[in-house]
Length: 614
Image 1 (cartoon, rainbow, N blue to C red):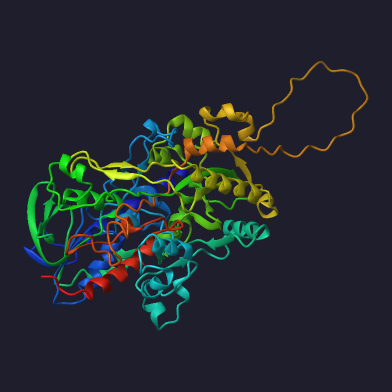
Image 2 (image 1 turned 60 degrees about the horizontal axis):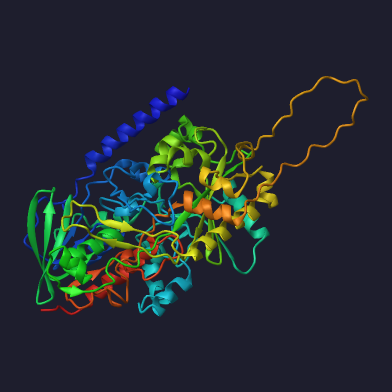
């Protein structure tokens, strides 16, 4: 039966892939040779770039060029459950950060791998599709940091325009047939109300909630069982416009300035054809938190000493370009359960699952494996519904050492094990890293140092999230499904806490049987409850520095108020803007993608209403 399921799944996947590739390039806006001059040039077809290209090309009198370094995304990126399938492939930049000083001790050479999408849709095509508008305080902090005009109230009209709602819990299927809700380009899917894992999590959270607690059911960018991000919602409907051109497999090399005004863009097609494209109005950079500062520096905007060392002419000195890199970290905690309500690989690769998805667009594959999220002050917990932690599928994605992975996920090769993972995180980390260059060639990887856990605040914040997980698991809803945490036990941390392999597996050491002795029968004694193991804080800190990995939310490297002004214009030059996560002055409380969509909508209005600079 297992072989049959594997053959069926492979056949369906191959056929689907061939069909997708056959029809993926039928849109006339994809061109192989650009014109020499455009009104707008957009660098990067990620979340923001797709919105900007669609909105700016609505005016048929304006010519828009959208550049993307990657090629068409594979079919597998469309399936919500298998988001990681495209990571470390052709559709992922797979940014290898520098060896970390304060974290990542359980990774090879202490090097985190940060996934960054490469292809139409960018990182929104390989993420976990989770929707949220952050928390009000996130945007208030931006104002205090000098990035004015981007408060929650300022963005609400654009949340409505893009999503038809200002809620982080929402299902577009319940929109009225007419009105702004149904007309909004982006579509959202709320997790099924009958999802048992979500119900248990919500009930447990409610049972110990206070005024500092906020629970949110998982909401995803899913439509008809498929990933539905800005590439689908914005760019695809615009791909037959004659005034919109899209160049794939094309990198931006540098912006050329005349009297400090962006005049043209040097591009490299297929790694060999160099060209110079002129711009009438503006160049908008939407290349992401890693590639955007790289382009700025290669264009002569950034730290003076770095630009001089790279032998590039200084256009505008700005020491903040490439600084302020922030990202969330996730600490995985494996929890086994006795009730069969989790998602396992055995269930995913069953015939019924494949039939449900490919014929009816329902079932496990049709929604990301997240049940919900609980905020508590600045700490948070996500419930990741996968009970299977396959070493073959997951270890290399995060660059774990084999032994550390196995000690973190004790049932790593059990495809039928029922369970889930709590992902503990700090929603507003204070550690800051950098993006810099060691060479002026775009073929040399960018030097990315996220500087994870540099600030003790982040460690304490994440420990609070872990302690919250402990408390939740002690509640009746989780106890009723037999939930039991299996603490990671990397060798480096065991000096801080005596936690054996038997303890981790929940096994009891048996005493050796002695010689039989004649004695009176002993009354049966009730079995004692399993011992509850609670590690000390020093052990948890060690775990965080050993096992925690990226939350995939890199941002902040061209911060608003420092590198760009309140209208996203790069300071001290003309005709150049930035619109992507790099402009975040400080982190959004977890999922940033939907916020970027709304910001890009506002950016399009700002650009269209700006006077032409001559």
